[in-house]
Length: 90
Image (cartoon, rainbow, N blue to C red; front, side):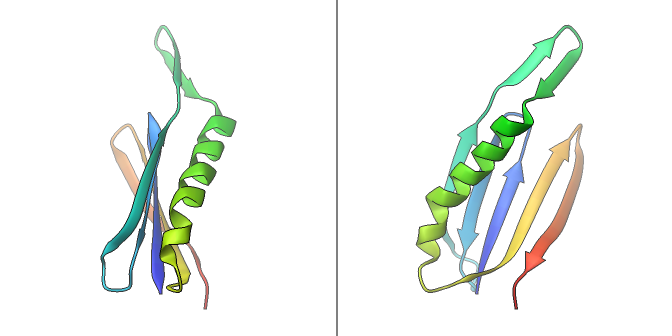
């Protein structure tokens, strides 16, 4: 079983695929633009989503025969960190 970890942050997305014994098989990162206007800042959701897809496509071939069975996503906004299991395939 492999584990796919995704970190969606303020300035970019990072992803890694891990083997069952915890070794990093491959990792990738893709930045996106944080648009600011005075005290306001926002991300374009489509840019974020495309960065996530790009990172996954870059690393998933490295899982090889070690099929991904769990996905972990980390989201961090204003120092609040949430970690949740998105899906576990049995």
